[in-house]
Image (cartoon, rainbow, N blue to C red):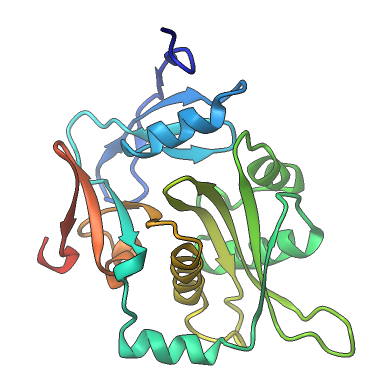
Length: 247
């Protein structure tokens, strides 16, 4: 008997400042996703807490910290809160399309505006068109760019107000990166709506989970993930339910 893919080689990044917890140092372990079985490897690694970035799968491997927790939403048991239901009605007019992973100027300009407001000076702040194309198009797995647009007018597509790079796996959708309109006239709650839409899409497709990446207790940047329940986190004994507000 032979394994469906060769056991991958893993590497470790050099230590750098943690983007989530002040004073902490982060380090990642990663491996390349390549070949005919890249999708199978990505799914296997995703179940043990790895995330994908282009053709690399990575997860935190910090020496003195284990704050990053892999989390996923259980789609068929999810019930939106009253606030989330109001939000879904507010954005019901948006036209949502799952596109092939090819970048457009419109997507890039939306990303630039989003980064300038939400993450100025961050690691992606200097991303140019080629960097953005690499982020979206260099994928060895089944990937989509889900676009959110204002309603079509006179046959012309409406304005792009949100987008999410998402991987479809056998057990769910993995949200890689989302960005959306954050200008002075933007509708509030677009980021939350994009997650709600992914949960609904996954449930309709019979996919049991939406993977939200890492949740970090005590990090304001990650607090929004606690609003989507029921939620599971990955621990030493596998995935299990938890209440993020009680952590």
